[in-house]
Image (tube, rainbow, N blue to C red; front, side, top):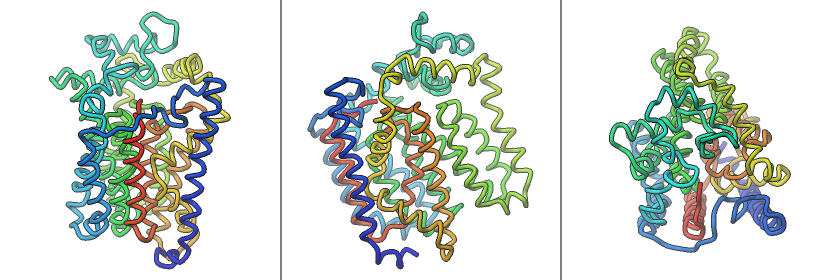
Length: 445
């Protein structure tokens, strides 16, 4: 399929150009709305960023990694033994993320990202008694109550904040440790997606996707963003599920259930990851029928995290409804839905890059061409991730900042690049985009 469709590469260029036009329109329209009405609450729409051309300590390393990834990435991904490939991809992804973050320097790029403003480390001292903090967590979500949580704490279930509380308890306190926790785990999302693609599609497509997962423009926002950590947990939940289904393994099913439960208590919106899980179930229904015990094991482990939090006094549903109230009390109630419902997609085009945009028509084609079963299976997974992202978009609960919020969905769009011919050209486009963003803009979250 890949060779045959390479004769229609002009369609790839049209799709990439459409993504560029979408981003351009979002910039122009967003600049007008922000200048005229000040209702977007971002300085460089559609991204939450400031115009700030600069270089930094990470610039040389980022340039070297980009050049090496483009020149050698596809060949290495094709030659490395499979056992080594996910580990190599994890290391390369983490290095790419760190180098981009260090363009802003260690202090501004990593060490203080999670310590200022509305970030998680602001409330560490309020969790000296964890059970008491969880029992009263819902009392501080909405605006106007005494001791209201900062936006990011109120906007997520408490497992997100507890992660950094527990890091502090074991002696890894402060923004540097928290930032590197997110960077290192965020880099592992790349490996998790590779494992899942190999299990659900085939190794050939996983190898072709590997360089694009490493050099993704999304790495700009995975540097010291807690959403990178969330993306990794969700990705490993899906990878474990893929292994459970294809290997008919009860231990992998249990691990997947446990991670899915944790995923939902890191971010409310990540319940939509269930759509990707349903795609995996659909692709492996024969394996599931052969080992029906996997579902009870999965569900039993899925219940562990919710039960623990419920026993500690936290009600997920109540907190979510309070969050909706808080969301519309703040800038979420002011930001215009009519702009963000499509500008969010422009943000997605930025973090996934022109290569992913070019690959999406090929993904649609793979759904209808049955001569490459593995490609069809991969296309279904990508489409499930796209459906989850579109539902999140239409909900109106993610207006702006989706360049970081949607990282857990974006990493599942990137494997579509496995369908592209001439990978080095598209990899170069991805790397250049990431470098331009990081050197021209000062991104925030």
